Image 1 (tube, rainbow, N blue to C red):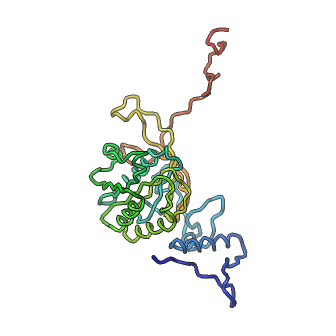
Image 2 (cartoon, rainbow, N blue to C red):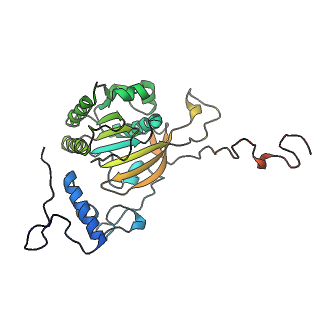
Length: 318
């Protein structure tokens, strides 16, 4: 596989400079570093993606806000997740990472990934190749038919692959990314695997772009690993809204899933953090309803505000 190396920068007629091109300002040095990293990752240079004007620190990273490319005003917490990404939608052929820092959040992590896949399957035909790491299967279980249907995923369109080793899982994901008949490829792994380094994720990215198939890498119990993915979503569970008083189904009393989603990597748009809810009826992401409040005055003693005037902590009159 060819490796893209950044050519040495020449500062004059003399020998090439193996460091930076000695830009006069600190933003110039940062731009030069980003250009070199972009070359190593095999993507567009920094100037092409964000334009020559650097965004101010207060606005965060995002699309070019120069007059040539005006930024779109969106409400990240009130629309679908794609509004937060600003141009980088899940349906595009690329590698996306969905991660969770703690393995105990495996249910929330997989649920968010299923919501994304359910939305994707509405717009793409074909099956989804779901590759499950054996360790994930032992710790968190495997996709469950009734649960998939509740998210709007037809189990008959799911091809479940359970390889014995991580090498086989990576091979299956790469081969699936080359098949344009698939709607998507999903790989669930546990922990920080040395096999999934920057080179491996870059290879997955290139396979996804060449095959036209979006690839999702769901990583349990890991965050902040080097990656060439287009986006990385860090998912954590959140308190659900108040369930209905008269549940219609066996699971209605549990409420609808709510997540705190941190988009901490986005190569074609801005980054951000928001809270989203999955609505089972519409089967889409939406702004969360009012969550359950925390218990006031939680501790060994009851809340003093809830005590009637003139009554002691023992409950007897004074």
